Length: 106
Image (cartoon, rainbow, N blue to C red; front, side):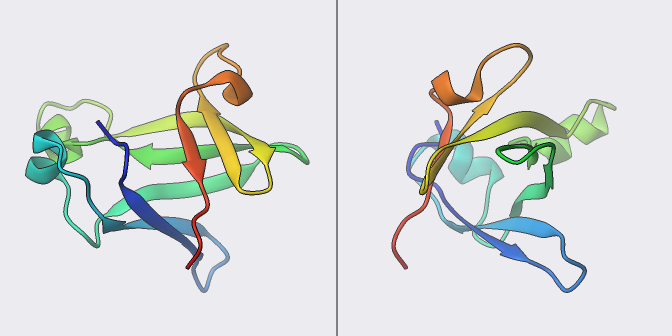
């Protein structure tokens, strides 16, 4: 569902990392619930030299919040190479996960 979405991760003036959507894919749910400029990654925190926690806003988070449900998802993240990191939940190994963020040339 999220393949092809482009997110630009930048550091704000307080030293926090935030990811904004810069390009969407053609998925009907993404088209319905996500807009260019929306905040997708709400935080990144380091847990060791090569592991960190990435907090991602859920698609349709505004709808979830109406029902008192969680609007974000925390992932364990680990670098796979210099341009890619994997995301895992629970006991899943981030390096083996199909969920990946890849750096693209500007």
